[in-house]
Length: 222
Image (cartoon, rainbow, N blue to C red; front, side):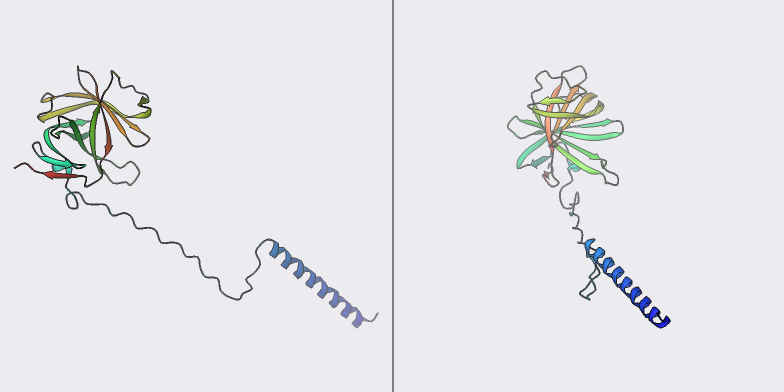
């Protein structure tokens, strides 16, 4: 075999080897789903959906009345019911302060309206105004325990417990000043259960759920 023939055969073998390598490489890429684009078009970049705008929160005192401006003697409308504010309790406990107003809707059904500025529960969450309308329920001799309570088939978990100092104004059936024991519970559906007692007396209990902003309208006394 002449050197020229040997060179030609060597080049032919090398060419065949390169073709086989290219064939197997392409086949492997196709199985892995990484085959190159064949359309010749440049793929468009993935566009992320724009985030939904945050809900616009109403402004207390501008978009709706500020419940903190309620005074004893005012008439308010809450959930379609007009009530007279007979009296108020101004309470404090461990640096927290809140107000409870006794309401009379004219049918001898008395309810308490509590108003408190609460800190945000999550990091970065701003404080929010919590307004609760409390409806008395029979305590049936129940004593608030430090564990979960089951009332009418609903489990309530302990939230806060302590003794608050209070100052009364108007008609409240309470002394002008004193100490009030309380125990608050919350159910998974957001319903609240609270026990209160004037020291030395028996427990009373009430249910409540938070009121939405703008639920209350205020008619100041003349």
